[in-house]
Length: 144
Image (cartoon, rainbow, N blue to C red):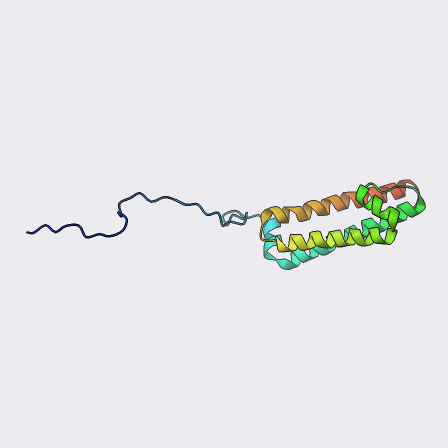
């Protein structure tokens, strides 16, 4: 029996492999069931409804703030809107609506990611608290 020389070319195949971790997950683990965020991710109509409700609440907040400012029982707490309000109340209203539309678009575009979807219910809860504050203060002052 004749022994022939090794004719392999390239790298030695016995070299240990190096593991490379590419994280392609979007924050959702398929093994776990999360009813709220999975519904926001999987059903676009649930997210659209939440974003529409968010924009309606923002508009209601703007109207109640304008009403409170017109009555003279409050002043604007947001310094950016306060400075715009000094220039033009209509411009402040448009700015508020435009910012909420941009935020809604950002949530819609990032709906694949859990961190972005967490923002939508948190923002909704914040607007609910702000509207509760408006209605409570107007009711406490006897305007409602």
